[in-house]
Image (cartoon, rainbow, N blue to C red; front, side, top):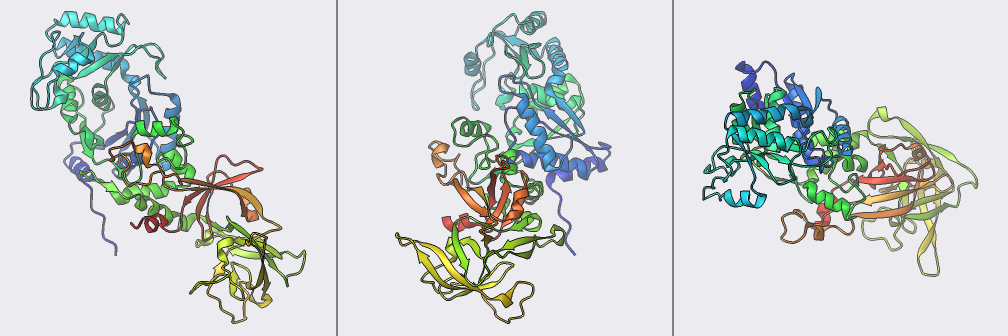
Length: 552
C-alpha cells in the first residue's frame, strides 16, 4: 500500500482556510504578462494554481497583466492560451488587467481623495536619488504636500493627455523612511503615449504592476494569490493598497520559482536568443518555452509529472534538467510508437534472399497492446547503421563483424560473409546471408545470438530530415557566470541529418506525433514537414548521455 503524499505548505494553508470557514471555496488565478512566450518555469505556476482549484473544487482565472502597452502583443496572448490548454487545463474566466482600467483609475482617485497619493513632477533620476538606501531613509519629494484638489486636477490632466511621458507620475503617499524600500512612496501611474493591444489609444496613463495586481485580485475575489519569492517584499504594499481602498482582502502567498540547470528563464535573455539568431524563434526546440518543448516532442503529462516531483517549496534551489528528461522518458516509454530509422546508413545485401521478393514482418508498436502492431517490408537489400558493423571487433562486440551472427529486429538471423570497400578504404556494403528457419515469431531453430540490430528495407525506405537537438548551453548555470550568458551556448546543440532512411509506416506521421526510433531515442514530427519531406526532431535520447559525456 503506497503512502499518502504529504501536503505542501500552500495546500496546508488552503485546507486550514476551508476548515475554519474563512472561505467556502477557493479562487486562484494565473496572471501572465503577454510580453513573451511562457516557459517551463511558468508551467510550475500553472500546475500549482490550476491544480489547487481542481483538488479543492475551486476555480482559476486566467488574467493577462497587460499594463505595459509597449511590450505586449496579441500574438503572446494567443500563445499563452494555447500553452495552458495544451498542458491540460481550462480556466473559469478570462480577464485582462485592462478590463479594470476604469476601476483602477477610480481607485487611484480614491487614494488622492484620502490624502494617500500625489502627483510628482520629479524626473525618474530625481525620484531615485530621494529614495534613500536600505540603511538610510529617503527624503520627501518637493511635490509631496500638494493639496488634494491640485492632485485631482493634475491626475485628470494626465489622463487627458496634457503631459509628455516622464513629466509627471502618480505616487502613493506612504513612508519615505520605511525599511521596505517598496513602501517609500511607490509609483502608481505613469504616462505612456502608446497603442494598447486591447484598448487602443483610449488611455495614455497606465497603472504600475504593484497597483494593478492586488486590486485585480480583489475585484475578482481571488482567495489565494500565489506568486514567486521575489514578490515577498511586495506583499506589504499589496496589503496596504487593499486596506486603504477597503476592498475584498485577497491574500498573497509566495513559493520558490523554478530554476533549472543548463537553462535561462529570463524573458529578456530569451528574447536576445531569438532576436540575435541563436535560435530560430520562440518555439525553437532548444528553447525552454512551452511551445519549444511541445515542438521538440515533450508531452503535457511529462511536464505535469515534473512539476509534481519538484513540489512546492519556500526556498530557491536548482533543479537538474535531467529530472525533466527522466519524466519525459517515463511517459514516452509507454506512449511512443516504436519504429525503425537508420540515421547513418550502410548498405547490407542478403545474398541468398530471392531477388525482387518482399516479405512483410509483423512488429509490435510498443509495450502497451493498445498501440497495436504494424507490418514492415523486408527485402534483399537493407540499410543498417554504419556503427553496427566492426571490421575488427572489440571484445564483447555483439553486433555485426566478419563471420558473426546477429538478429535483424522482427526478421531473421543473418551472418556477415564479407564486405566491399571503396578506393578510400571506407566500407560501403556488407555481404550477408540469412537463416530462413529463424524468422521472428516462428523461430524453432534453437540458434541464439546476443545482438539485435534495426534496419530498413532499401527498396521501401523513404528519406527524411532528422534534427538532433541537444542542450543549448554547455554550463549548468549560464546566468551565474561573470561574462555574457551567450558565451556558454553549446555549438553542437543542433546537428542535421539530411537523408535518414525511415520505414514506410512513418509516411503518415502528423505534426507532433511522437516515436521511439529503436536504439536511437525519442523523436517528434516537426511543423516544417511537408508531404514531400518529413522532418523529425530528437526529443530526448534513450539514456542520459549528457551526464556520461560530462562526467556528471
